[in-house]
Length: 342
Image (cartoon, rainbow, N blue to C red; front, side, top):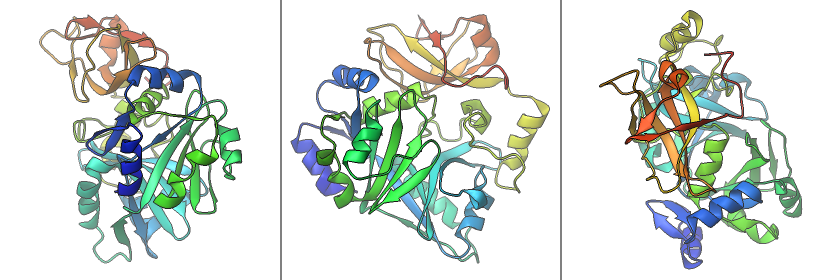
């Protein structure tokens, strides 16, 4: 996927881990740039599944947590769940021309596509990977001006708009943020048309996702969470009045009966702390001998500490003492309220 662009990025100093250009040699400086300036990031670790055909919308609507039938000119979060309501994957879905494009971590793309294909049956829908396309992240106070310089639209959240070969999706963040998607040749040429925008690796982009309170579901956290545990109901990622989909009964019961005991929180660890991996278990004094939570993602922050999203027992959060390897978490405010739904 995106081999030519990836080779150019490596030649420019990018460090490759798996399919991700994680950084360009100074991760702390890059996250500081992402926190205070306008940056772009080549998201070579992301994959795209294209769903096309007369029944594509109805098929995706029957499989995912959101209202795909009324997607419109927006990008939309959707959970793909097991029958037990546990998330296998989390997509951002956008419509382009006559197809629906699903953006997700490349590491789980093949498995998710294979699972979806099992349920196509007689539906007139074709599922295919799009390896010749690329995705770029753009973030910062001058991001709309950078898009204008590149001749691209700057839609408002949650809208999406296409200029030439490139689709621009506005996504939540503490500063303006966008995902740009299209043929690799078109996307890889964009940074040269956006002067003054700094290049950062995937880890700095992941830190921006953490600050936005947006979960990432990968191989380490697949089937670990019901959508509401990761605040998907607060992120417009669940439609509670649509028809059935895998796990819908569990998701609806959690919503209507108020049995949610865990929520996703933003927290930090002090400078010098190791970075916990996705899926790492947290502890709390009020639950001796039991897991109090699970890390969704964690990255180095601009102060040299570790910022993370974690699904945590509400009772443990409210007690104010949650630990990872005996290090206490300091809780931070998410950019959206939790109180009304907890």
